[in-house]
Length: 284
Ligand code: NDP
Image 1: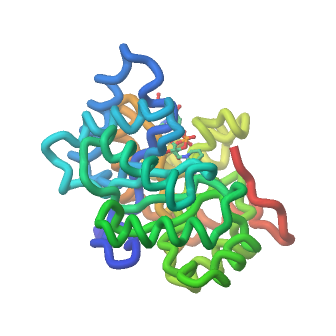
Image 2: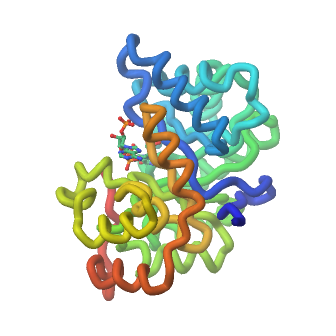
C-alpha cells in the first residue's frame, strides 16, 4: 500500500501524519517519557515533528532536542515564532534560541505562530534573512484565515510561504469552505492541528461517536485512527497529533495506512456536514 505523503516546497515527501508537542516539556519528570514517545514515532516513520518556542516556554523544544539527538537528519523539524518576536531583530534572537534548545543548526520549517502587530512585510523579511543564513529551510504561517492569506500573498515574497497550520478535525470543518481549496490550488500543504480534537476534549462525544466507531470497527481500528485517516484523506493535508504515550504513537503511525472508502467518507459527511457558508477560522 502506498503511504500518503505531503511535500513542503522542495522537501522530500513526508508521511501525512507527523507528531505534535504541545504540553510536552511542562514537567521535568515526564520529559524522558515524552522524548521516548517522539523517538518511537520517528522509528515508525512519523518524521515531521511540530513544536514552538511557546510550548512550555521552550521546554517542548528541549524535549524534541533530546529525542532527535544523533538522528537529526531523519527528522523534518517545524517550530514557531511568537508574533511579537516576528521582526528582523527579535526574530533572529528567537530563532537562535530555538536552535539552541533543539540542539541543531537548522529548522526545516519555521512558522509565524499567529498574526500579531508586526507587519507581514517585516515577518517576510525576517524569514528570508533566516533562510539566507541557512538557519531555516523554509517558512510558513499558522492560524491565518483566508483573508489574511490574501494579504500575505500581496506582500512581496509572501507567496514563498510553505504552509498554513490551522485547527482541523472532523467536527471542525470550516476551512473546507474557502481556505483549504485555496491552499490546495497553491499546492501548499495545510498542517492540521488538534486532529483528534484533543482526544475529544474540544468536542465532547467525538471519540465515542457511534458513526465514527462503526467505521473504526470495520477497519479493526480505533476512533482516533479514523479521525486521523479522515483528516489526511484530504489532498495536501498533514495531521500532527500529539501523543506522549508509545501506545498512542503506534496507533497514530498505523493510521497512515487506513484508506476510508468513498462510502465511508459519505457517511462521515452526513454525520459531520461540510460547511455551506463562511465561518471564522476555528482556533484553540
Ligand atoms: P490533538 O488533537 O493532537 O490531541 C492530543 C491528545 O490526544 C492527547 O491527550 C493525546 O494523549 C491524545 N492521543 C494521541 N493519540 C491518540 C490515540 N491514538 N488514541 C487516543 N488518544 C490519543 O491535540 P493537540 O492540541 O496536541 O494538537 C496537535 C499538535 O498541533 C500540538 O501538539 C501542536 O504541536 C500543534 N498545535 C498547534 C497550534 C497552533 O496554534 N499552531 C494549536 C494547537 C496545537 P497522550 O498525550 O496521553 O498520548
